[in-house]
Image 1 (cartoon, rainbow, N blue to C red):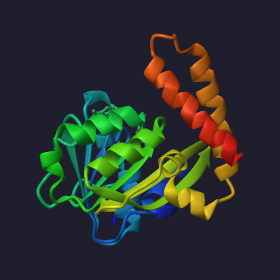
Image 2: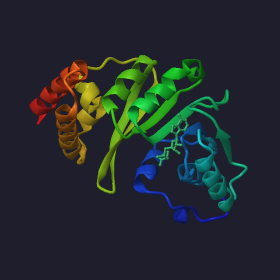
Image 3: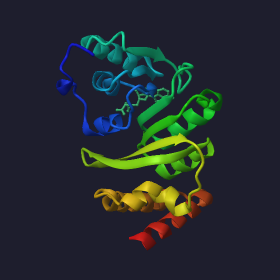
Length: 228
Ligand SMILES: C[S@@+](CC[C@H](N)C(=O)[O-])C[C@H]1O[C@@H](n2cnc3c(N)ncnc32)[C@H](O)[C@@H]1O
């Protein structure tokens, strides 16, 4: 463990909640680590966790390097420059990606599916397109083990935990989240109402030539309307 008290690692609720889904003993890669605060928190609070913190830009990695040095955790966190899951090593069993758009996450995971062979758990917190994330990651042979919502600075973020295996979902489950639908946690209604507003706004702005996307949005809005 680093020399600094874990209580003062400056990590927000969103990252803390993400960290709560990481099991002791995990060997993980944090793709798009930026400041690496999540990784510093993880190796300081979990038992026997091995972390690769990676980013595709040098600037964020330098910031991460400084933070890791500040907490004396150079021996616990390996920094790697690379695109998506490229920097993965053979023993990695968990992937975390948070704080980027859902389509970017899908691209990252679908681009090199051969690197997913040893992966047991994928933890994602997309900023957008969550229903597409559920659909596409399911196609890669993972099912939703858990889901939750976390509010940070008035924005509600979903957190999705996938594990290797198969399950089938309905359109409604892809849209709302199969586990969120069942648990109906306190933020759920507010989250769905926000989704409705965002989709209505997008539909308003989207030119007619994108008829397929418009058709899909209308379908999703009908499902949401029925639920509300
Ligand atoms: C907004 S930050 C999120 C930081 C942190 N994961 C969080 O949740 O607070 C997004 C980071 O992802 C990195 N990034 C974006 N696309 C990437 C890719 N294809 N591969 C690796 N890193 C990427 C960016 O450079 C940036 O540092």
